[in-house]
Length: 267
Image (cartoon, rainbow, N blue to C red):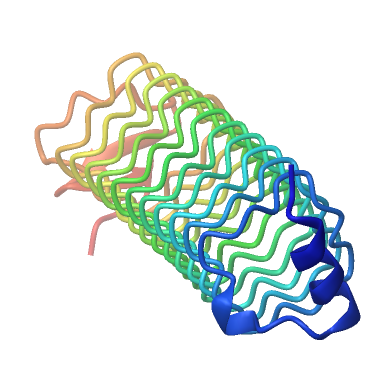
């Protein structure tokens, strides 16, 4: 259980925020507390109540936040490298420019969270719920998003190089201009997703569902496209291998490595 003395000092504003490293705050009720720039490295905050807390630029490296309530918390520019956040409630949390490299966010709830330009390189996000989350310009290289829920997520210009999105739900997601090179999208659901201008070179899209998706101008060179569902998919100007055996909708054809509607002339 939490150290009640430390909890009391945090709540009355008398705590030394530089000396909270390794603190035992398990199950503590710190709702709406001000922990701006606090040093909580290696602290135990399992199942703690941090609703609406201010952790702007706090040091939370390797902190244990499993099952913690962080809804609408201010985590701007927070350092969460290698943090344990399995099952944490981060709905509508504010995490712009947060450092979440190698953080464990499996089964966490990030619905509506602001992760704009956050660094999630090699983060573990299997089964996480990121519906309607803002990931504009986020770094997700080699992140594991297997079976993650990303319906309606905003991933424009995000970098997902080498990420694992197998089985992920990306319906209606905005991936315009996203870097998806060497991404695993096997069995992913990309219905109605916006992939305009996205780079998907060497991506694995086998058995992915791209019904109604917009791939206008996307780069699909050397991508694995076996058994991809392309019903009603927009493919105008997409780049593919010249010898591509992609099973195109009947209204399209390949000309000089680009996909065009039949009857249009390559220029």
